[in-house]
Length: 571
Image (tube, rainbow, N blue to C red; front, top):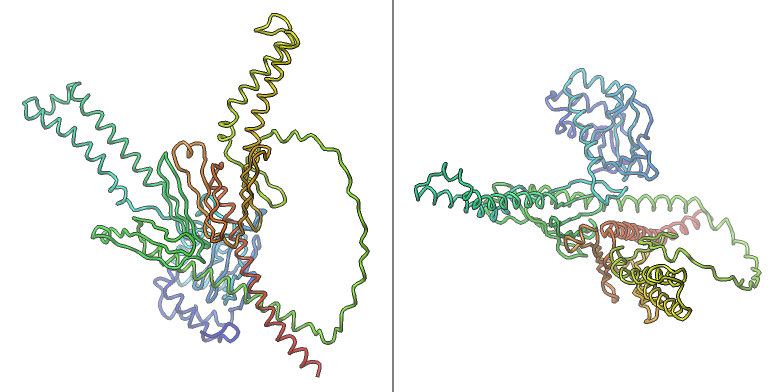
């Protein structure tokens, strides 16, 4: 394929012609009409460099577009955080909304994520197309509906800079396979009715007897309840493919939940397994995803698994192409900046003036009473550092008895001072001192348990995770483990039982390749949110790390080219 800089008009016509022949918008059009439409693209194609916009949100114009080569991205810029809506790959028509709605504005900003070749069609082209092929307008409406549906496809924990390609659930055949026990339970009522028929009672007469209903009703109810349970348990598992990762959420209804996910960059292979003739007939397969981080990710009984497999691989290739396009764009920009700078003509920079260091003496501040210490905080965010503590249930479990003792002994102190029940009058001073001592002991017991919970924390920064295991008031010491994002391989969470699921309590497991071993954020509140937050920062760190490494390599090459250019210009 020719480069974008050297693309010829006749090449554009051929490529547009090939795209139109397979696009539903042109279904039913005569070959000569398609050729005429494609010929309009010859002088209307533009090269859009990475990061340059094609349209901006809320603009009003009367054009539609075709991506011939490359890839664009549609963004919603109305919110505080820019939200990615869709990717528009080669062969995609878009921008029809302002043509369908006379007063319409651009609903999104569309930019190139790689250097792209885009054809700009005018309103006259649209009128020409709909005049000779009226069915095109209905196809365009369906296309716009698909774009809207794609933008709405979401899940809990979706990032603003990713889009969801597929949310798949298990095939209904997997539900039927779970109905063995409910079906067996229905045998008992059938046997009761058969026995009634054999002894001469008759089926109709048996169904009028309360004794027969007392025998068969428990089996019917239990079978129905199990069927309903298996149905919702079958529906609640999810397999998600996005532009950045694949996610498998395995839930056991009313019991547990586990989540695995792997970035597309760490997927090594995708295998589709078919087990028997039923799987072939109903198109039910298993997917095994081999990753460099969490090992194998196994999802069984998926419909159209081959399509999902291809979608994962396409998303992976596209993600790598976007990363390559970013590196190329940065290299191009850096090279341009370097070649415009002649360091031979600039001379040496002026010497830096000596710095005067002034000695500052520490200011002694009086310690302040921190009343916020006794306010339990499950999550704290300060200067991009997030601190989590264990679930409030763990705190309540630890301080319940000490708190009752503090309340009880506190009441006794007031009773001795003011003559409340069980004292008829203020108590003697030695009894008051004893109860005050009891109150102090109970309060220490309470603060000891509370401080042990408060000091056991998990910390997330932009570059590392920290697990602090501490004893109360550090009386028995403190252990601090740190792990760099460089060593993290996978982040999963697990909610182990129905009780933990009810109160949203679980563990977040962070597997690392370092000598420090794996990290487990135990018994945290809302583990799915904790996992998502860690994954987001880890993913952003990995992107920045790759970009810095690429830029460092680029700068070395660019500097050599720049030095050569400087020498050539100085001659």
